[in-house]
Image (cartoon, rainbow, N blue to C red; front, side, top):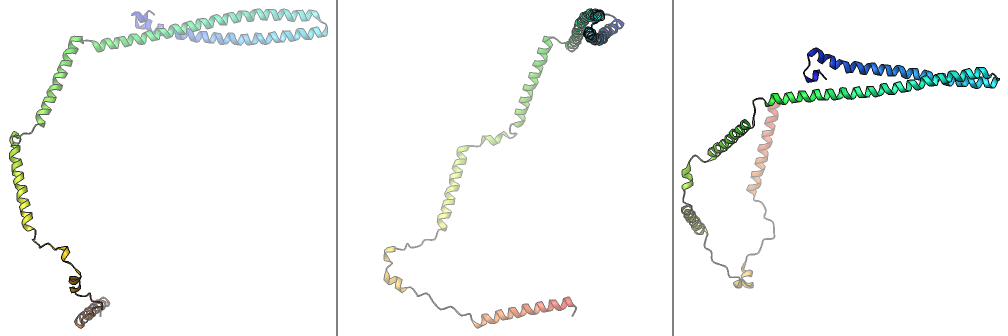
Length: 240
């Protein structure tokens, strides 16, 4: 913790390595004791089986010796259990303390970074900067409005009433021209149409109109001309 509160760089390095080294050693020793614990448990089972065997053979002395060994192993196993519990508690405490220390170091670095960022800054300067930004934004909006306004203001001085009158005059002239182009025809009275007038109409011819000889001759001449042209083109292709 001394390095955290301003110790030298060498002490700082030692303080970082010391917790790590202690954690590694504790874990290694816990593993060693766990292996010893497993061995003692195996010996307990072995001595108990031998005591049963000697009893079955009627040899009480050897059976008692086996039970005594079993008791010794049990006492050692209980001590190992206590040692392992103590080491695990110590390991947990060191890991928690080291985690807290690293957390404090990180928080201290964050505090230094914030102080460096805020160096030379105060609320008055911040307010002044924000006012400058607002002024520039307003100036930009005024410039944008000025650019978007029309350059020729005289276009907005046109009299709308005068335009309406001129439009009405053009419409009247157009209507007069259309009326002058319409042909005047006498309306047909439908009540005068009777059967007599219908009978005066010429009959529709029924027979087909035969084409004139001149028309037929013209068509034949055109067909002959086309045949001659086709023949000449064929001869030209063949080199004749």
